[in-house]
Length: 204
Image (cartoon, rainbow, N blue to C red; front, side, top):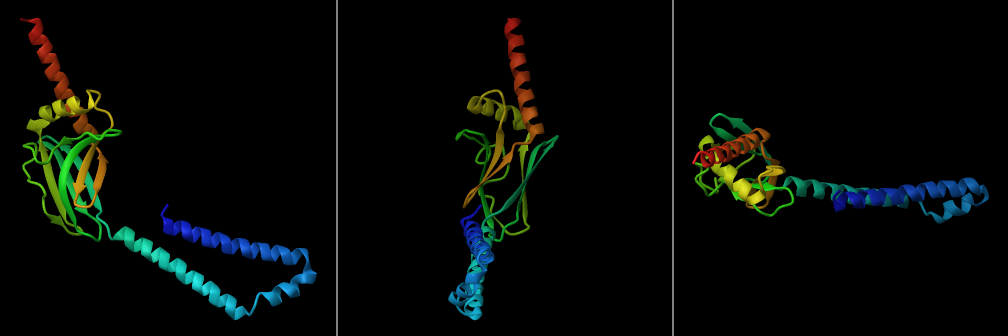
């Protein structure tokens, strides 16, 4: 929850608490109701004060809304195809996005396996500015699955669990669970290679 919304909730809670407390006090002791009312000042002063408080709350809400909208936002989709892993990125924020890199990461680890800047992708990075609603697609070719599998196993271990696709931009990072079909595919390629090596060793 953002600080602005915390401030709004606190202000509303204080206002509601005061109103409830005042009503209870009058109900308990009706004889002092006139004294309370006289000390509260004119109705106009109270209306003005509540209006000022409402204006502050609305300003905080609009400021928080503008801050959240004025950032990079990317929708990342992955599709495993016969020719490889197709990665689509759509800009959905008010601020244009500049995609600077693609990596494979893992939960709880700062390590990464680079996809961009290697021969795994035909596209060069950064891929350019993406305005609202625009889409870019990159493909991790099927011919690179075994090489990717080797690097992933070397970096994160051969369990292939908790893998994430990391999209870096000029202002931040976006994380997406690595496509399970792709993960199973690279895991299978690595197992096949290991079985082939074991078979070759036994037949020497």
